[in-house]
Amino acid sequence: MAKQTLLILGGTGEARRLAARLCARGGLRVVTSLAGRTRTPETLQGEVRVGGFGGAEGLALYLEGEGIDLMVDATHPFAARMARNATEAARLTGVPLITLMRPAWQPVAGDNWQIASGMAEAATLLGPEARRVFLAIGRQEVQAFRAAAQHHYLVRSVEPVEPAHLPPNAHCILARGPFCEDDEIALLTQHRIDIVVAKNSGGTATYGKIAAARRLGLPVVMIDRPKPTGASIVADVDEAMAAIDAHLAAPLAERGA
Ligand code: NAP
Image 1 (spheres, rainbow, N blue to C red):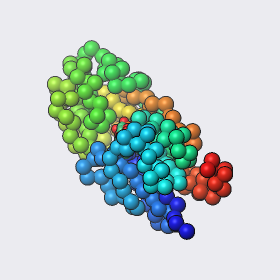
Image 2: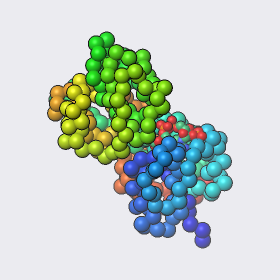
Image 3: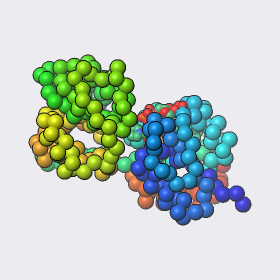
Image 4: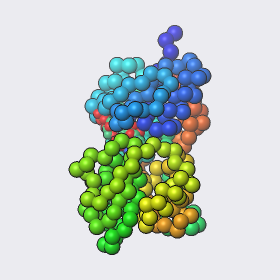
C-alpha cells in the first residue's frame, strides 16, 4: 500500500522539528514547503519543495496533484496570507488541515508593553521625540518606519533589507536566532537602545529580546498577531503529532472523504 503523504507548510523551527519527528518514526511521506525567502534555509528531513503555490487555488491543485492526505500549517503566526490560503485550499479539496501555532507571549511583571495592531501604528507609537529603536521585525515590513524618520534604528534580519525600504538613520545587522537573553542585553546596551519593536511571535527562540528589555527597564512596542484562520489549532510539536495520528487513524468517512 502506498504511504500516506503529509504536507507541512514550513519556515519555522516547529515545522523543522515536526518533519524530523515524523521522518524518524517513518511510515509517512513527509513534504515540507518553504516560501523561498531565505537563501540558505536550515536542513530539513524528508522532501522539500520551494516557492509559492499561486494562491489558494494553486495550493488546492498541488494538494490534489500530489495526493496529499493531510496538511499542517506550521508557518509563522504572522504569515497570515499563507494561513488564509491553506484554510481555503482545505475547504476546496477536503484535505484536513491542522494549524500548528505557538501561543502568543503574555506580559509579565516588569514588562512595559504598548500593543500595536500593525507596523504603521507601531511607528506612530514610537512618538515624536528621536529615540534609539531596536527593530526586530524581520525585513519585509521595515518600510513602514520610514514614516518615523526622526528615530535611529538598529535593524536585525536574517536576509538583508532592501536599501530603499530603510529609514534614513538605520544600522543593519544580519543574524538568525535563537538569541539568548544575555546576548540581547549586550546588544541593546552596546547600541544604547531606548525602545524595542517586536512581533508577538511567541516561543523561546526570539524571546531573549523581550526578557532583555524587561531586565533593562526598556519599553516594548509589541505588534499583535493577525487573527488565526485555521480551525484545528495545536500549540506545539507534541500536540501536532497527536493530532496527525488522530487524523490518519480516523476512517476515511470521518475525514470527510
Ligand atoms: P505570507 O505573507 O503569509 O505569504 C505570502 C505568500 O508567500 C503566500 O501567499 C505564498 O505564496 C507564499 N508562502 C508563504 N509561506 C509559504 C510556504 N511555507 N510554502 C510555500 N509558499 C509560501 O508569508 P510571509 O509572512 O511572507 O512568510 C513567508 C515564510 O517565512 C513562511 O514560510 C513563514 O513561516 C516564514 N516566516 C515568516 C515570518 C514573519 O514574520 N512573517 C517570520 C519567520 C518565518 P502563494 O500565494 O503563491 O502560494
